[in-house]
Image 1 (cartoon, rainbow, N blue to C red):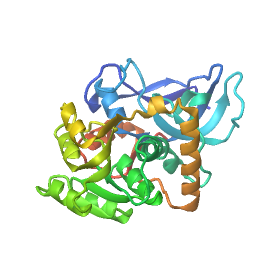
Image 2: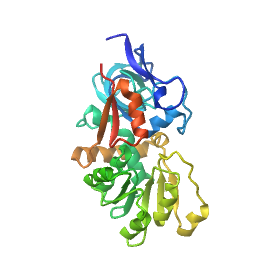
Image 3: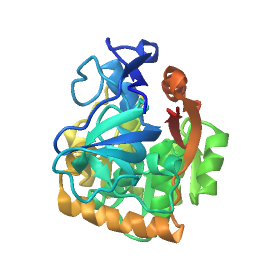
Image 4: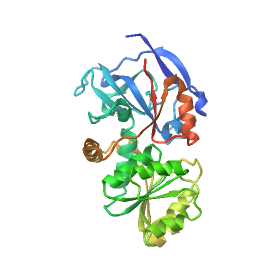
Length: 329
């Protein structure tokens, strides 16, 4: 094996073009760590925010982006058990994925169904675990209820539509273009609306007999947050997962009181520390993937050298499904 590898490095925070492709030493795993030969990296909006310095936690530079990736275990650190050389795994490591080799704590590895390709494995953990926790763990969605899925053609959106249908919910999907709504319909969405349809709030309430939407997965934020409040049913649950608009949302608590609404934040990083919730999600998701009811939606795939373009395309809303980067050698 070569002693060096290609990796993306960020030394200053900013737009995607701050990312640089460098030649670095191949990392060695320490105690409790494993090294993966990276096959595919799933890119999330959170990665884009981290590079910009706008994520939930401080981004420390220099660093290699890529919080979610899949690959083959090729070295084990001292004390690591339960992982085999040559085994394909996914990792939720927080950083380091945009490289030909990545070291990650063994505790950050996520078991993946054997039926998944490397690309599907990289598209699986963040989107599908987040969707499950939004729909069930925090959202308490029940069969027959309506759920609103925003940005329904994106990585989290496609996961949420599929999973909601597999769990027996009715799906109202919104997106920015008719082409993206077609993606949501293909995955089973019961009703689709353009996010800028001037009648969107009325149509959402009309679809539920005037009652409103019981469960809303809020990922856009900004002015759209008020729309979520307007669409919500009495005792509705709004699960705040993202802020793709990058705009400030405003909330007057009295609006929650009038209809007994609940607004709950969801951050996968902290939820993964809940062993019981993680185990439950993994069991359900593994079963649904094995049965074919849930299939990770692989979007465009970019080479490592085009990582900045991939990030920019996400910002420009040019993509559907999970954006992937394939380091290769």
